[in-house]
Image (cartoon, rainbow, N blue to C red; front, top):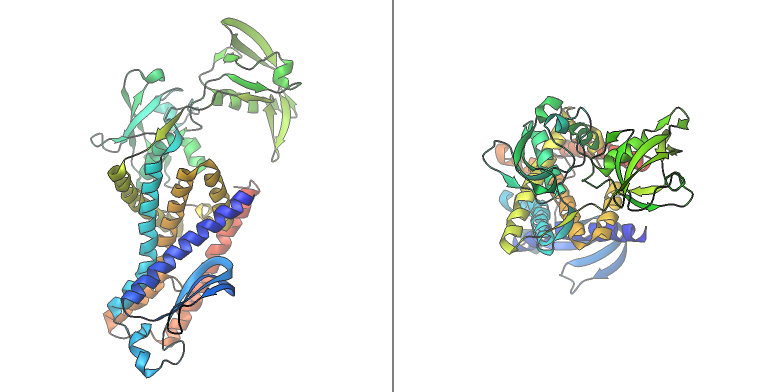
Length: 456
């Protein structure tokens, strides 16, 4: 819990400071007087100002954002000798540059963070598949447990090397959003041979990316051998005579390819309120044994499932994903661009009803992911920071009043008509923007709570 809170606060602090620093730096470069640079809102906890004419830097009690306050005649009287330093007196081009500098700083930060994550390197699951779900696209494409996905392509000409399962899921996500099939270069178990398989993603009839969609495609957890791990004393597995190191060959005479299939069969072993005995064939030191396993019934959020109280499967094979200086920087630029486009596509599809509003996340989900990524290592945390920084940059560019994109919308109107938006319309648009933002925040917070309660 402490790690989650600290990681969340560090995330907010970094992203807010960088965003506001973008506004601040360009404002100063344009000759605008910056009165205050604040991290957070509300009561001031820390203040520093080098001189009466210098910018006041403060840290405030509510760490959910920040702001840069500039000299502006619309917010109070300005001395005649300082009017040339007021924001509202600047040219349209300069005002636009100051406004767009915040989101731009977030996007540039994302490029650097993605690159740093690649330079440091991360341990990720190898792109080796577990058994595809029955009837799924992956099964129809001829994919099997133990298949190693080496590369992916949209057109069969340009292939992208896949270094990990995360790379594979990223390629699938992009193909789903674009409504295109995805070709895969596949090696069999042990890396033998190479063949091509095609995921016919347009057949799904949706471009809404979610965990449910990934299950429909047929991709579950990475491949893990069906070998017993730690067996709890007096649990169903121990009572059946199972031991750590036993390799499960078959259940009810049907051969097993991976640990995930075995877990699913254990979960599905309950009929009504009682578990059904299962006949397992196991290999123990070269000898085959037939054992009867009776799972216990476990209530999982109202659903009755089977459990055997043992760790199923060997640890997933991991690979180190690390890139050089130039390659990492290139990937940082490409990933920031791709995520920016992906964010806009998802927002557009949510707007027209093609994607679920469940995709919106709020502070609780961000805090949870911040804590998880921090515990996984610095590379994962930097990648998470980059992801949130992209989202912050793109969202702030949306043409909504109260956001940077809303101000750019006003300046576009001014540039086209030669006159600024009237105070009357400015007030109306501001109220409308506040209503939209409150609605979005409410949906995001509802999604957060629903995820925590297991309703999503």
